[in-house]
Length: 159
Image (cartoon, rainbow, N blue to C red; front, top):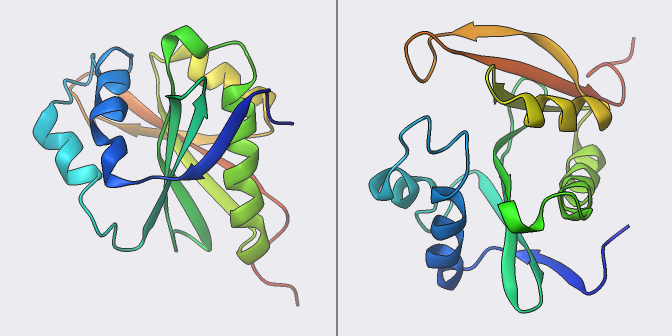
């Protein structure tokens, strides 16, 4: 259920500055040393093979999700973040439910990676039905792993 008053809509290039300000203030992005050029690549338009969504409340962007299509018989949630000031209010759950609704109409799997040090993110995904598949060692920074997670509605094929 969408917290009131909030709206979810497709990302627009005009959202870039607000999204980057939000992401720059959050772990794991700070710890992973993401910078402006990284975000410019992620949000470059047109977003070939990707869809992005924002959730707004009170006229401000409070969350973002970037979805990469066609990944391991499903889709991959490449970026997902809720502003620190908006966490714990249901915005994350609402945006994730929106993304899942899109994905599960066309595929059986949704994947996401979460940094091993991102305990809050790991709890969030576990509460929302994601299963840890396993670590990918040293994927983004030395000494850390990205944990691959999966939520599925069934096998990709039925025999």
